[in-house]
Length: 242
Length: 325
Image: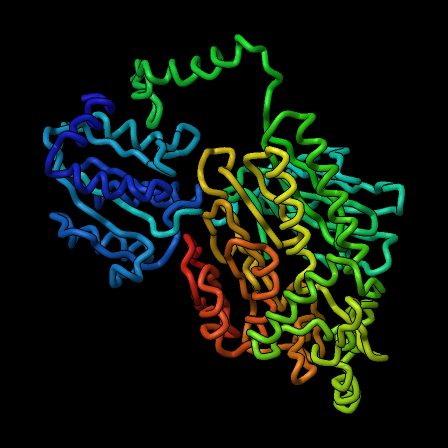
């Protein structure tokens, strides 16, 4: 059964449709659909990889339905450092569904109502191995409470003077720059993935006192010099306040 | 080798709707050969901070929109910066009336005359200092909005009283600017003036705007708001402060005591008008009981981080996803 048929099956199956549609309502949730009759064996291999991508980080988990592998799953998750808690407190909720027809073991990550491409991750090897197993009907779902992973590390550094980007630098390379902004001079450096202002001719030195930045969307501003250095990368928000 | 396609991709094949969703917009743009609309992003420096503007439209429209915002901001800055001496223009009178209303509704927690305290503690010159208690006592003689008189459509300030529009002017400017842009036909966008935000329409993904609220003590976010056609503003003890012997002294003063207000790390207010979000956030930061003030403003809601880092929600609820630390 290919994935498309699988989703068709899910939507038309009276057993799983209400639950699936309920999940769909919160379209920005992060959900993992795992087809396997031994989810407790697959999960430990998936979670570290998903964690690296910023998903399913937390401490507490709970079952939203009774699960046939509940005991084994509890042991596995506890071994991974998770604690069994009440459903309200849980950052991770484990659910169970039975597929209408047996499907080849696999997993799918849905984020913001869309399938997340996991090609680049180590998870692909797990997925490929699962595909050789015989079809099963046990569906385990993992739903994360937090719909936005913490900020991702940035990739590039944009340097703006008077609102114009004058340079883009890779965050991965150690660089030092001194820029004449027209209203003064400012020096900053990129070191080990962090950006910091070293010195500036401005009066209050707010930029020099600013903490180093590294996550996408973070920036250091020097208003007197009309200078902004900003870490760019995949962002989960459109803008930041506070 | 197994040539099975990849998780997340292979079942997207053979879906005719995908073809239409790509071709549809392309075809619809062809006949008129309209100039292409897109998202324009600009940062301008104003109010001693950065103002980010992101709007959707055609390049020319957007450029004139940004020019308009620039104009509004520099006018507001001239009227409301510390030391401004305009006490009679229509804008000043309008904002003064609003300030007085919030002052009364908040039982004096919001007060325009804290300027003298900002000066005393060194927040204006950035030469921070911890004043002696008697100095604070002296300064408090010049604090209190009831000291400001109105005569012949003018504000009359007694000697020594200093106005601090910092808790209201930026929000007001954002409202003026966003109104001007919407009137000019800009249907989607946001203006974020150093944390005073108004967003309208939908974001580039055709969803509500996602607004990250900074964590008051850690890098990263406290959580994410999902709002459209709404404003939000944050007051925090981490925005401007200095430390003496490990004690944090910040720029939001309790007008009754003359000391920085205690008990909270940050207050974010969400609601229809930026100017109200701005001054309610300042007032709530000072107030011990936020519920009472918000009862008077039923369209506004607050997300408060107390001194222990606990999240408290008050007033109207807006979609907010806290991020676990």
